[in-house]
Image (cartoon, rainbow, N blue to C red; front, top):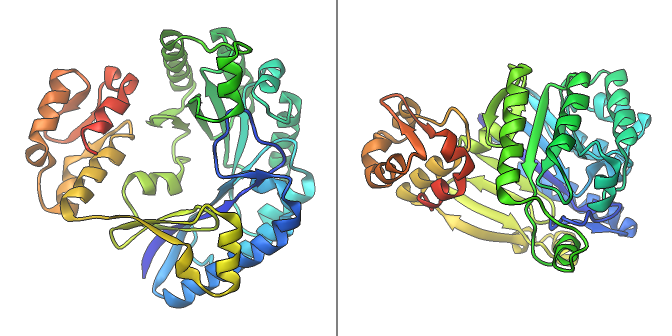
Length: 375
């Protein structure tokens, strides 16, 4: 049996955050049931055609999966074969959760929660369009612990409008008191056609400069490492043994299948995704035209697969194991990518020895320049 990860996309939310360009829709309650029914049909059809696949991890993301009735999440989990399942994560947002939902998640086999907090300062939360307060987050976190969730991730953001280092310090100190097993820290990216982009252009909000944003990142890294968290990927920190298995498999170029609107998949050296048109997605599945939803993104040859392995692997703080690369491809990456590696080492962005290839401290700050060499 071949093991794969499963990603489920729930494209609904209560309200779009001002920075959000994810595939999500507020005010679509009338489509919840129809969408979930199509999602279940898609899952059943795929596994009827691929009986040899075994699910290793499940990740339910969005949108805001906790914005819909938990009976729908239960239907999804009951449709998936959870035998030998190692990890099942669901993203939840404060303001969309209650005790009944969290109990249901626990009962149906979900063993990891990822809670979107972003900041503990309520003024900043309001400025970026979040629907919750820090107190709502605390209530959510406490409910999760009360129900018995031990493996909880907390999402934070840096580089937010009007955010100061003191805000980061306060957020980290408050979060660490709760002793989550995992913390994800993302730098704000101002995406085109978002409300945040308009507010910045109009001068309503002002971003920290790049130097301050990089200082924030280093502050977070030092703080969490001193508190016993392992920095194992650019944006992710965990207590030992609580790394995200689903995401690690993606960064290690393992296979996964995505279900739902716009969901991405990687199987048999092909990267593909579903349509991002909600009405089209529903119509095609109702008509049993599953393949009409499928969009091929890339058919990899051996070299492009090696390039991607490098790009993904260099997201991890430990980098790329030369031994693992040789075991997978039968060749030494130092020889294959000697030109790229020489350039990056000369620029002090990579460290290379006989055992591994990984980002330097400078490379962490300029990781995009490193990844570009392997595209």
